[in-house]
Length: 143
Image 1: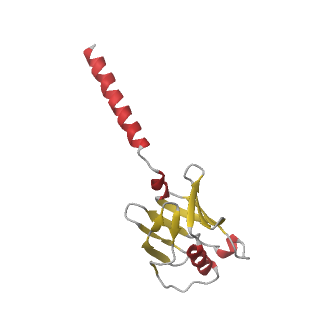
Image 2 (image 1 turned 180 degrees about the vertical axis):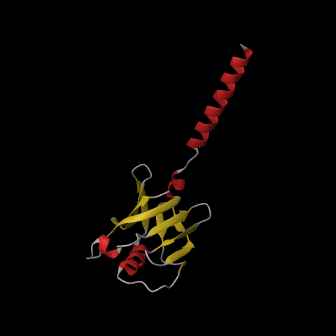
Image 3 (image 1 turned 30 degrees about the horizontal axis):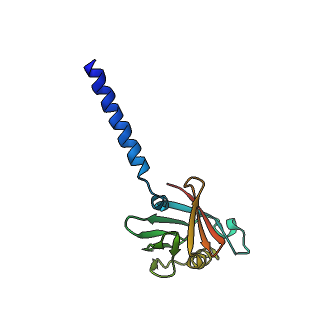
């Protein structure tokens, strides 16, 4: 009987610890991860025409305040500039300088520089970068 009581007590502690840790996840943590672009506003060229071989992605590391990713051609990296749901990519990004054909990369970078807010929907699976009230870019979580 005593062994059963100890087993139940231990099981209760484990479940309580897991539940407490799960509850500690904040909305801020939802931004962490790697996100692949699946929509971009503005260009007159179809999305598949802009990115025929490789879609751009962004990796956001909230804890270290860093961003990195790929424009579909060049890699980029820099500091995460955010305050609440406000976000900015206007300064602090570095990038490799390989020659890239087409309008995919300049469209991605110029749109990224215009956004000023973000929103995460679909239970953390979709990230929207917003300018004013317009969703300019939509990403889906890939990790």
